[in-house]
Image (tube, rainbow, N blue to C red; front, side, top):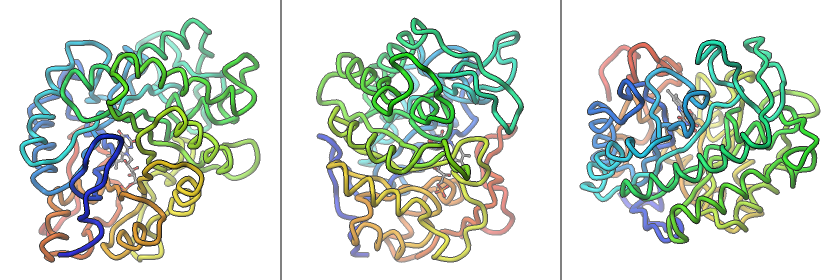
Length: 368
Ligand SMILES: Cc1cc2nc3c(=O)[nH]c(=O)nc-3n(C[C@H](O)[C@H](O)[C@H](O)COP(=O)(O)O)c2cc1C
């Protein structure tokens, strides 16, 4: 079918064949040490064969082992993880799609006692209301070592032949906890003013450039809200200013999301049944797009082709990203292209958050 969504787009120097992005999705299927597994290569191949233009990997953790968020998560903290990403990139490239590796550190959302006897680390010791856990505040030296860990991870994505890296600055993980005044109460140069709270992003960009060169696309997934009501949280105004700074530091594209672990149902809102429930970060994406001169990726509850088309046509975003719908239907984009579908069959039940079994749709019924 002819649609603006099937027009190519450039992200930095990367040409993407259409506007459909597979948003980063942790599949819990990594190998014992976090290496990319055969099941994961098959998953990436299926997504590429199903016409997703840009595939963003599940978040891969950059520092062992406090950076780890879940069982079965991928890792990218050492050179031995490069080979697996190379296999994934080759599988994706065979279909003309692009692979971007999302690099992350779980920060205060690292599971309790993992590894045993160590507290999660975060900018400040702010108790997580959903678990009652209090992380330990990072030392200055540890912050610099994290900056280097992110930069090295970006370098490894390049070494693996991937098409870019996405820095995870969303969902309550380490970097989004730096930019929010709720979780960052530091009084040194890494906290306080917005300039200080986002300093770590600028340092990572600078060092990642050294590790991967000026031409390697570095994207960001950016929180636009913590998702909790009241004062003292990340504001949209601060998120927009962060986006502007990221653009100045050479970010290739910004995906706009929201929510932290304490704010249930914000990141992956449940029960999206009607078009008006879709695109729940559209106002934030629009604000980012108006302020920062970089391609913007809209994510969050996108289910209907016409809603996605409108988002690109009316200038809310340049690309649209899907996570849960592609768990159920990895070939959804191909179905859109051939006119076999105009809406995802995903019901947003969130059963795909399934660490025990790996990523799969458990909704009964024949897949459309
Ligand atoms: C099983 C699962 C794993 C996810 N893993 C990640 C991840 O690794 N990194 C990330 O940025 N977002 C992750 N997300 C969030 C999605 O990328 C997306 O932002 C969110 O689900 C909203 O989009 P959707 O309505 O298309 O699912 C995950 C979502 C699900 C359902």
